[in-house]
Image (cartoon, rainbow, N blue to C red; front, side, top):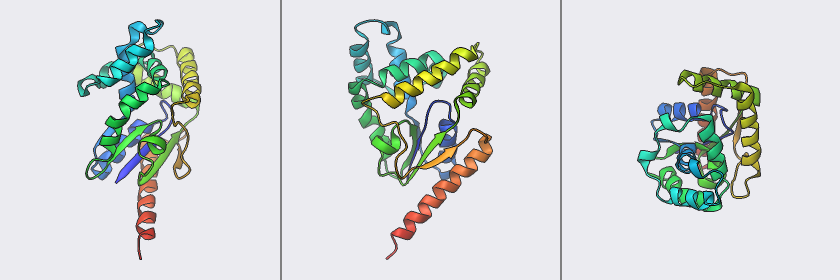
Length: 215
């Protein structure tokens, strides 16, 4: 069983994907960490003509040891992630890693921007998670503050808005709701209610698929 969970930054998709993986006993990959790791690796070249080539090289040599969330969840690294994600060769370099994870025996849960549209379009259940920008800003601010980081909420709000625009305009991406994805708005939901709703969506998708496969 492959479960694809897509959505914008701080919509709750990572928490829900992790919860779904635990509920169904499946391995889980936060694909955003791949792009964050590449972005962090080339931070010193952000305003350099070398930025794109350095990002491609970092993507091609990415190692699992580079995916430590503790070093990748800052707002700055998130901005860098969206900048490297518009580079076609970076996305190509990271495609196989994601695809192999998705198609492993027994299935998997992946969250990101283009799981249901590009990485695993055949996923058994697809969810597109959304929440309004203000709610997402506050969630991300609390995450960062819990890690001891100071947060400028005004700046963070605009970073989220800018990242949404960059992600949606990405000519090499697939950041949109797949036609067969189920929309889940978490703006007014706490994590427990959102996870219950997500589980109900997956159970419904699997039941529908089982029914359609009956002779």
